[in-house]
Image 1 (spheres, each protein chain N blue to C red):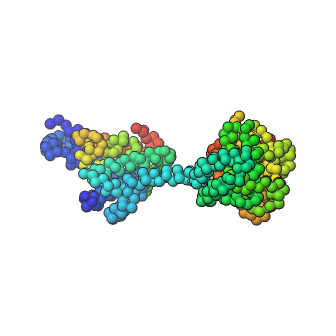
Image 2 (image 1 turned 90 degrees about the vertical axis):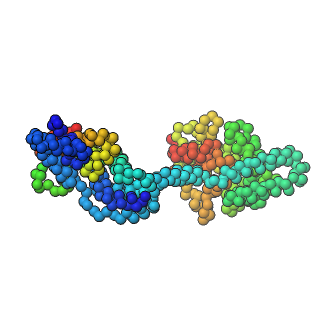
Image 3 (image 1 turned 135 degrees about the horizontal axis):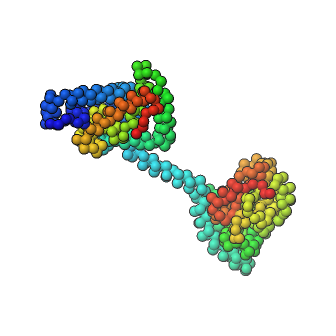
Length: 168
Length: 362
């Protein structure tokens, strides 16, 4: 029902934008993709609109990333990050730099851990995350524990050592 | 209960443990210092991680009204737009390709003409054998020729429409003789083309009945229509009436080196029998296929056409579909100071590619 989608839209749009932003790292693009996802939902009328939206959004973001990789933009950006983020101490860095560091730290997570963490942060329940990632519901807690630890460690390592961060 | 693993603690902290498990964990934490410490550790990790993620978020902007999404969706349904765009591109490309290949009506008219010309040619041959019959037949031939002319006129092609003009009929009157004679040694494909051409010209002879005016009479009739027909007919008898000249002579006529397709054997170089400085270089694609590269000084044309906007060679090209099958399309370009046209019994595509390669002969 379109009214239901309108309701989901009001509740979920900001989270969906946030989720997409952490994948494409471009606020406007994230908003465009989020609106595109809702437009598709209007056509498909899925049963579980919210879960469906995140699946579609994840797919769109993956396509974006592939495109970016093809254009080599992706690589260039990643390469330039350590130089830009290694000098300033934590309390002096601006929001952009912090974002870049978090982004770099997220790159250290496995795709599945990262996906679970971002979905949780976007407000999805363990059940929804399990449905979307294919993980067993009982494994979500462990996955999130690992993802959180990895994120914090990678972030701190990036701050201390810049390029010395061990990847993978 | 044994110690609680970190996954369960995270689920506990996230409020995602089923209530039965939750009760058990609560009970354990009450009595296990180790797990309590671990819980505090995991809570700190969770809060830190959440804070880090929170710092990597887009600038919060007001949610655009849902109506906007709905309207955008109605304006451009994603599931329709992409395939339609593809389809439209393909249709456009095909359409353009077809359009650019050659004017669409030409083939139809050429086909129509071929059908009608054949019987006329037969009759014309018979008439040539027995002149007595000539007086009985002209009516029918005039009617047929008129039909052909009408068909061509309908297609916007002004070629046979000038049948009645003395100059044009004079030009064509000399065609059958030389064409039919010249046809025998020609390659098979070119052969058939010429025979079909001669069909047209024979019918015109019958209509007219007049002897061919001498070369100088035609030259004297400097009207556009005469010029046009002259260039057309000259093109078609080139292999038999254009005198063969040396390369040096060609260069002096053109004021520049003659041009051709590099790498192809040059069979002959001929000059126009008329007063213009047109030269044709005939080159062999293979043993049975000869292309003709017509060339003349580009400047000369504009000087002697006296304001007549349509170049005689362009007219020749426009008339070509009526006079010859589409396979002898002519395409033109400028090479240095020369205006160059190409003609031959191959596809327009091939001719175009060959024309692209044309350059001064060594």
